[in-house]
Image (cartoon, rainbow, N blue to C red; front, side, top):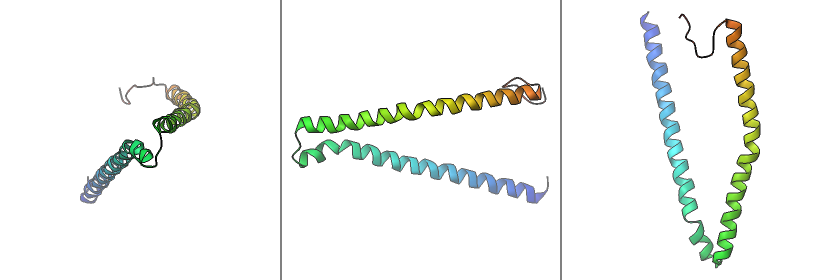
Length: 105
């Protein structure tokens, strides 16, 4: 290998590492914010003079909405996954290889 190729590979791997690290930090703060906001929802509603029933109904409705969105958005995702798996299988058959086999063996 040439020296320029090696230094380009090192630079690319550093960039990839920084990107993964940045996404990890971003995910940490997003999760921290989400969990923190969920934990203070009850006391916040209580400070607005909401009764226990109102707090329960509001949080329950939020959970219902979240699970409902998962249910609705899950069906198209399953269809996409099946289409991609079928496409991958056809590509492997066209190459004369089985799915999961290693090239050159």
